[in-house]
Length: 190
Image 1 (cartoon, rainbow, N blue to C red):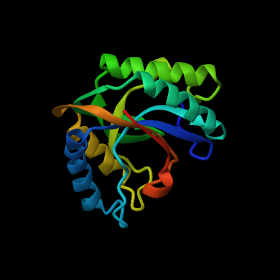
Image 2: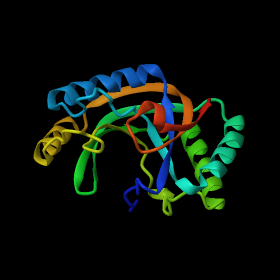
Image 3: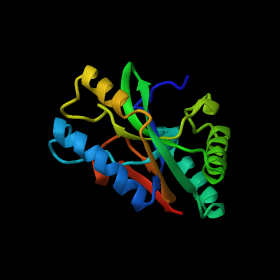
């Protein structure tokens, strides 16, 4: 089982999907967030696919490794299929399942292998990693959804189909914050 992130010790390596996919997913996120006033300051979590976590003290080495990998990969296909519930730290999150396309899998595996070989990745059991886009969770929410209601929303939406595809636009290293200025440590166009 993948351990929960240590927000004080880790940064995230994320892929940013193309606009059509993000716009569609954002509509669901916004409806629920506004209903529950999750983010009174209107700073919503940016939708993304996390592909690895890194030791924040080794970010410079991670940047160097990612610069090299990005040169070799110019097209990463992202496909989503349906909503699903994932339980983290005893609480459900509503996510969009991301299909393991060949280009995504090859890219993510290479990123993880090179980061792990350099002692930068904090993920020990990457074979258990599940690609997803979190739509609703209480992480970073100023007014969290009560656990029973979040579970109800999640279970209601689970399995609803919404097939979409897009190419990845960027790979980035993020701090765990909603602040759009402070979040991005490094960004690479694909």
